[in-house]
Image 1: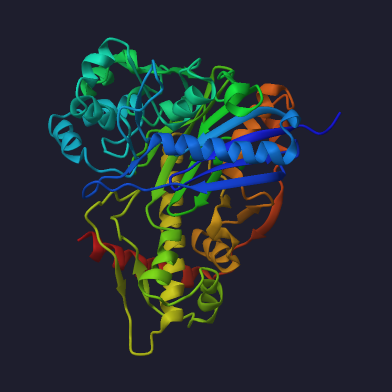
Image 2: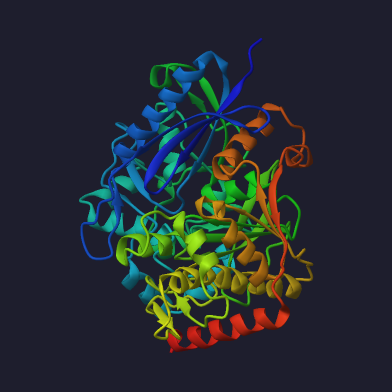
Length: 496
């Protein structure tokens, strides 16, 4: 019998991808297709849900054709989180463009709910802050602004879903309206303690219960992708939001294990086990994964600008032609330079949550050059990560949990050895870079493997994780303290 593969769908914010993984977690084929970013108004971001579906389907068919559809055993799905779609149950047609997680059109709605004193209740039930980032206010907005939508929703004619639900509906020809616990936990409509859609939250945001999908474990039977759609019948057996999928792909299965993904932004997730840790540092409490009915929780902190800083050096300042040049520039910079960058181009994320803060570069002198600016840009990523690591350690200590001082990293930026070493130096902990860096897609595939019975436990899955490189801190303590002092001073000015 020939080797079997998992088809992993990785539906992201700017592109749709499909990958084939073997049982060892190795990538055997990949296809990718970008799609349009739609900006109808200031602060509005939309996607055409049909374009997302069509690009996803094309990528899946390309990977299946490359390795032979008969050689695939199941599908795993991971997706951009919080993006909201409403569609007609009868036709599968969206009633409007999807509202993307980045969209800020519902800021006034969220501010109104905050002024009315609802944020504490929302945070208690969901672990989330009251912010347009999450799905709930987007759904309410669509129901209020699309003619007849609210009445049709109440009549059971419409369905809501995050992108995972939308893809499953299309793959199964409307036979399954489902989501998983990790995606449900990002809507602000799901009680993460009771593990169910919350009637109080649905009422507060004006969302009909008739719209909502069934919530399943992350490894479960989500439905059958049909031969009519895909060219082969394949069960959908694993599903998780992108950052939770990366946590699984990094095998962060024990409380205290932490992963950080460096893409456009940066997302740090810490496994807190079967107890949700309440953050005193404005981190998010969320569901890491739910397996066999048992929930593992996580603390999450987000940095808005990571790889996007390097894009700005290239496209905005035109200091470099390629992102890879930052490694040599940072290494060549004066190690005693005090140049410090606070990359608040779109505000600051956790633990500050300062949307109105703006970027600045401090302490430049006549001999400051592009190498110093490149170094300061990369250091700002490390310094923000260090802030999150301290916040996570504080929150977990308050919950009576120990945090092993170690960080597993992934994402495009971590190909840069200088950055990984700088992370180790400024976070004062070892940095582990895995052999397989496609951790988000791998996490979705691993969930499907678990449901198939290819592995009988998380521990068995975790044994397949392999280290590619480890970076130990070498920076002197006083030098680290000096860097931190410069950073805190610069941060204070930006926040002021």
